[in-house]
Image 1: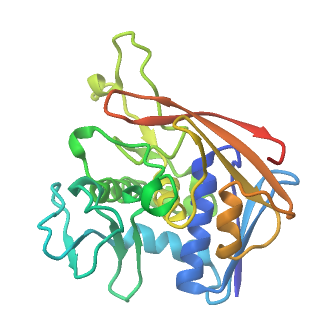
Image 2: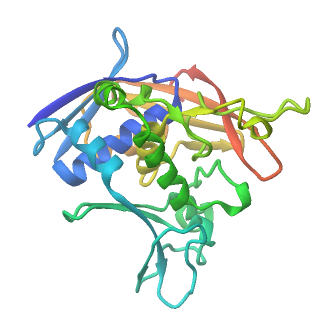
Image 3: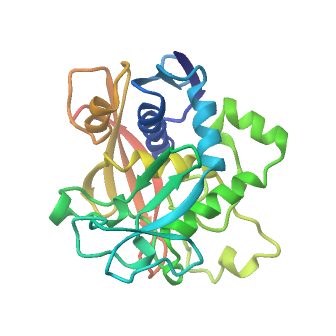
Length: 288
């Protein structure tokens, strides 16, 4: 059994979602696993897994070295349009009508039988009762699988020293990143209608992102979502006691409970006409 503690900004929703993603993946691969947020001094995330001496190191190795592919249903003829392998399965990939090629589920897998599938962006309030927390869109239909691949490639561009530092502080691993899932507020920007866009200055301006935050955040959102308040406002929470995934999921979703818990509301803004939204700021609130 091993325990890791990593720094976390609990006022950064993407980092909180990523912490749940670490817990979910640790429980799947090395469980049973439990985790908590400790905010007494500098906030940290503590993760315990029974079958790994260093679960966060093992999870970072998996997510940055594994293969990525889209997943589609047999008979639909829907495949990824951005050069990603598409795995065809016999059952429907989601309960909704078949998703578009850009929103096909994504599978992370390796040669040793470990795999984890992410599909939350293809869900809906009508069929699942949960908002899909899909803040990304546009980009000529750039697919979820291609976005996940680009996050992995961005991490691989880091130096060996930077990769080693990421094992101790994964949410500070920063790399040039042109696109992602819009779950990291430090990377995002919104237009100011002043005739300026970083996309028009690619040779002079490099937008930096946080690939490990977004990779683990999409895993964290697979079985839990922040509570939908409006299109531009969501509530989430962090917990102060060691919890397994089954208890951590509803707490992150902002459910009122008797555990040591802190609640936050994140506000979003519209980025462009393509539907992208960016996390703008976060405020703490009393228990709802």
